[in-house]
Each structure stands twice: as structure tokens, then as C-alpha cells.
Image (tube, rainbow, N blue to C red; front, side, top):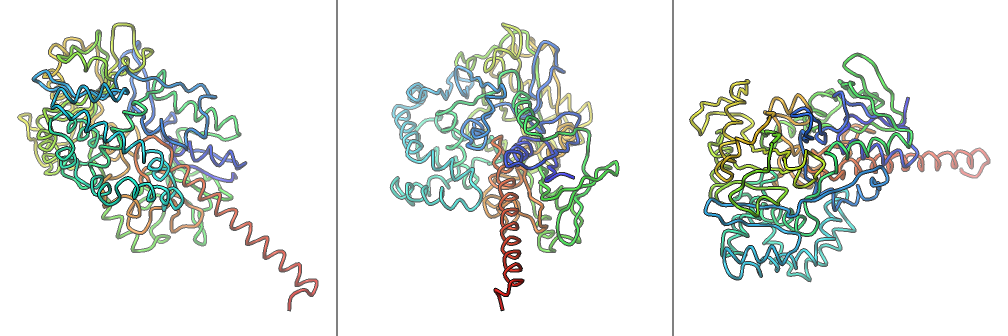
Amino acid sequence: MVDAVVIGSGPNGLVAANVLADAGWSVEVLEEQDEPGGAVRSDRQVHPAYVNDLFSSFYPLAAVSPVLAALHLEREGLRWSRAPRVLAHPLLDGRCAVLDRDRAATAEALDGFAPGDGQGWLDLCGVWDRLGDDIVASLFSPFPPVLAGGKLLARLRAAGGLRLARSLLLPVRRLGEEEFTGEGGRLLLAGNALHADLAPEAAGSGGFGWLMSMLGQAHGFPVPVGGAGALTAALVRRLEARGGKVRCGQRVSEVVVRQGRAVGIRTASGDTLQARRAVLADVSAPSLYGSLVAAEHLPDRLLDDMRRFQWDFATFKVDWALNAPVPWDSPAAATAGTVHLAEGVDELSRWASQIARGLVPDRPFLLFGQMTTADATRSPRGTESAWAYTHVPNSVKADAGADGLSGAWGRDEQERMADRVEEQVERYAPGFRGRVLARRILAPPTLQAADRNLHHGAINGGTAAMHQQLVFRPVPGTGRPETPVKGLYLASASAHPGGGVHGAPGANAARAALRSTRATATVLSTAQRMMSRRGRGGLR
């Protein structure tokens, strides 16, 4: 028996386990896969001389996360690296919107699209200077963020109040139109909004695009030196140094509930592990409430709400080992860690519309990662470890292209879609395909098989749209890690504040478990004192 069982060893599960271990709890983490990390893993399976990240790669939210900062993972050997430029969005006419950590350089590049747009960018940076710290504190605090939120509201009023709030709630297309005359600034905002499943016309996408852009401007898009797995390894080392354990190859099939309280787990092999104090689940909300916890222990309303739960877009990813750098037509793209590939905001809207209608996009918007550019340890000198991912519908109705893709994602369909991805890269980097030594395809079923939380390759734990955020995440009336089952806590990206590698859902769940235990101990202590006084005749 241990104090707490954590289901899943993604970053949120490992953060939760570390927070509990710091409080003196005995903790075991059970992981279905043969190695820990969830969607934060790397390997050399594309080519033995190249390190490729299987899932996530760039971590701007980790760079500002107070949760991760408090763990001091640098003491466990974690180091960060950044590309010379944060992000580039080239166009076929040779222009390129560039996000540089030097805001003056970013502004200069945007002035090349339209005079005055550079000052527009600096104005947005000024808003971040006034509000950024309070936004980060509110974002990573348990919901509702009373103290951090109060400070943010006070600063928001001073910075423009309702006028600014309106801007952050705008669709990113409209925010870009209001702030910039040319295409460059609009592309940076819209492309960053699409790091989540927020179409250019979605309410709130402007605020998310601005947030991601400002994080890149202020902190870059850092990567762990040596691969994404270095972050996981640091979390595991820290946990084990405090007595915690991570057991891989252990699929949890059931949360054991007795008299309304989670008392442990049962694995697929039939083994049980008891938990004295808490069970924390770094699993998707549909998995927790639709599989791990029997329906008899859950309110009917919750089960009904879960039927309305919306996943984010499915994902299709290709990893490459390249024998030379990517031959971009735009020189600026060669120095960026992340490159966005779409021919303008209109093409982004066209792409998102195709997904919304159940069509596999014919010209996929690509997020392209140049990992050796960001971290020279990833491949031999003069080469590039690279990847690109795009989104596809969770349920495919038809193919907007000419390949007849059905969404079954058999081997042939995977290859044809990977070719489509490479053709999109070729539009902006002629000769790219001639530099491919090896490639790996991660289609939606492949991603889900490698991490059960990535349902059809959905990487955000559920849509980032406003109707499933804050008090609506994962369902209306929640927003906190506590569940209807006492001692059971949701510690995944399905909980507030959602996706991204920052550890907040895990930390929030761990702190909720600690608070509950302290509250229970206080009640018991009070009851014991009262009984003692009654025994002495002190109470009548």
C-alpha cells in the first residue's frame, strides 16, 4: 500500500507525483507503455544518428511555468536550448514573417509587410509587459484563480479594461485585421493560434494567438538538450530520489471505489495496488469517466455531459532524418526552430474549414520543426532532425485532395498523406525531398497506440475552444481536479488549464489531494479533542 497512486507518467502525472513526494507521501506511478513520458518522449528509431521527438518538441509554456520552475529540474541535469530565431512563416513570393526574441527585429520584419506594423507589434508587446506575469500566474493557478485573478483584473482595468478584454476575445482573424495593415503580423498571430484547434474565426483565438506569440517573443520556444525525453528523465530522477516509483508496462483497467471513495487501482493483469490517501489520474476525462470508474459511482449528469465532450483535432505527423539543412527559399526560415507553412490567413481558414467539414485537407497547414537548428545535439553537423505535423478530422467523411483518403489510415493511406505533407514542404523548400534519408509516419491510430491519451492523435486533451475551458473543462461545473469520487483527482490536460507541457493540471491535482488530507486530519483531530474533553466531563 502507498499513500497515492498516479495513473499515467506523462508530464502531468510525473509533476503530480513529485509534488506529493515533496510532501512526504509514498507514491507509485503506473504507466501502460514500456517507457515513461506520455507525449514527452524521444528516440533514435528514424535513424540511429538522429534524435527525433515522438510527439511534443517545443515548450514555451514550460519556460514560464512556475510549477516546473519550483521543481528545479536543472539540478537533475535538464538543460534548454533555443534556435537563433523563434518562428518563421514564409510565403511563396519570398516574404517571410519572423518572430525573433529581439522584439525590434520582429518589428523590423513586419514593417517589411506594411510600414507601421512593427509599431503595432511593439504595442502588443507593451500589453504583455504590463499583464504577462499576472496572466501566467492566473493560467497556472487552480480554478478559480482568486489571488492571481484579482491582481490580473486590477491590472487589466489599468491597461484598458473592457477594450483590452474585447481584443483578447476576438477571433484571431479579426484581431490581426485590427492591429496590422499587412499580412506579416496577422500570420504570426493566426499561426500561433493554430498550435491549438482554434480556427482563425473562433472566438478567443485572438487571445490564444497573442499569448503564444508573446511567450515566443519573451522566452523563445525552448527544447530540452538531447531530446524531449530529457525532460521526462529529469522528472523521473527527481521522483525516484524522493522515494517515488515509476512502473512501466502496467495498464490500469479500473479505479477501485468503496463507499464512494477511491481506495486503489486494478491493472489489466488483475493485480491491485491500494492507496491510503488518493488516486490521481493523468488520463483523458473520457477515459476516466467512461472506462476506469464504473458508471454506478458517477452522477448521471456527469455521464450525460461527458457524451458532449469534444476532442480537439486529430493529428498526422511525419519525422525525418535529413542529410542537409532544409533548402528554404526564404533564408530567414533556415534559422527558425519552428516554421509555419500556409499561404496566408485565407489558406489557414480554408484548411480549418475542411477539417470542420470532415475533409482531409488537400493543402495541409504544417507546423514544421527544425530540431538540430534548435539543439545541435540532435543530429550530425550539417544535417537536420526535422518533423512536421498537421491536423485532420477525427471522423473523416471524404478527401479534399485527389488521393481518395478515407481516414482508415492503413499503410497505403499513411504513405499518400505523408507524400502530401512533403509536397507542401516542397512548395517553400524546393529539393527538400531529395534530402530525406529516412522518415517515420505517425498517423492518428499510431499516436493513440503510443499514448492512450492521444485519442485519434488529439494532442490537447480536448478542444481548447471557449466552451470547454475554465469552469467548462472538462464539463460544465467542474474546472477543478476534484471528481465526484472522494480521493480521486483528474490530473491530465483534460483538466484546467488544459494542454501544453507545463505541469499545472498535475500540480493542481496533487495540491487538491494534499488539502483534502489536511482538512480530514483537522476534522479528525478536532473530533478526538472533543471526545477527550467529553471523557473528562468538559462537554455536556
